[in-house]
Length: 339
Image 1: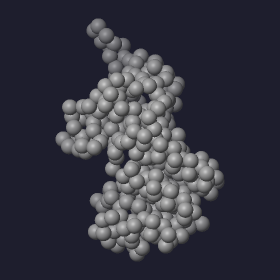
Image 2: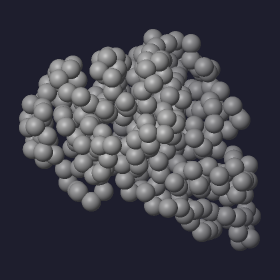
Image 3: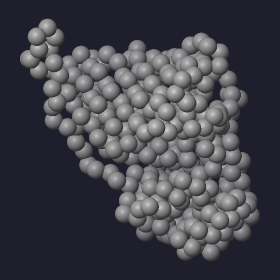
Image 4: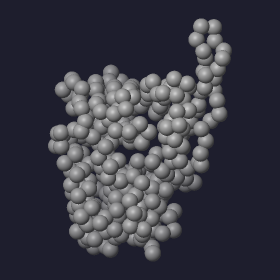
C-alpha cells in the first residue's frame, strides 16, 4: 500500500532542515520523499513563499494556506503536524473528521495537559495511530545505555548533570523524554529562571532540579545557545561515569583506575557502541507505518507525550510559584508555548 501523506507547517522540522543537505533526511518532507511506502501529495503553511519553495522541491502541486480545506479536498492517509503546540488539538480534531489512519506530530504533543488528553482520547476512540517526534527514542544507543545503567555498569547512580539551551519546552522536551526513558517516572521538580536567556521570550531557559521516583537526582543547567549550541548529559555512578552527547549521540564510559594520590581517578574505557542511526525521523515514520499495518502500539506515542509535557509544565509552574511541584500535575489547563 502506498500511503498518501501531507504536512501542515513547512518550517524547520517540516521542510527546511534539509535545505543544506540531502544524504540523511532531517525533516518530515524528507522522510516522506525517501520512504518507498509514502507519497507526499499536499503541503500547508500560512507562508506562501515556503509553500512555493517546498512545493517545487518535493514536486507537490497541492498547496494550501488552510489545513481544513486541504483535508476536505484530498484523501489523505497520514498527516504531519509541524505547527505551534497551541494548534495541535484543533488540527487533530479536523483530521479525524476526514478519516485519516495516522498522525506524525511534533513535540510537545499539546500546549496543555487538557488538550493533550483530548488528542489521546480522540486518537484512541477513532483508532488513529499517533507518533510523537521524539527522535532519540528511535536511536539504538539510548536503549543500549538504558540496559547498561540497569546492569549497574557504573554502580549506583549518584547524580545526573545536563547542559542544554533553547528553551524548556523546545529543547527541554527532548531532554525530558530521554530522562524518562533512562530513569523512569518523576516524583518532584524544582525550577528557577536561568540568567542565561533562551532565544524565545515565550519559552524561557530554566535551571531545573528533578527527583525521580527512585530518588535519583538530575540537574539541568541552561546555557545561552546564541553563543554556541550544547546538549550534553553526564551520569555519575559510584563505579564510573557516562558522558553523553545528545546531538551526536556519542557515549563515552569512564571507569575507576588504581591511579591517584589521595582519590582514585577515572580513565576512559571502551565506548558504548550500538548500531548507528543517521535518520531517526525516517525510522519514526516507518514505525508509524508498521503500527498502522500491524495494529500495534508505536514506540513513541501517548505515554511519552503526556509524561514529557507534564515535566515541562511542572518546571514552569515551579518557576512561577517558587516552590517544588509534585507529580502528577493537577493543573490541566496551564499553558506552555513551543514552536
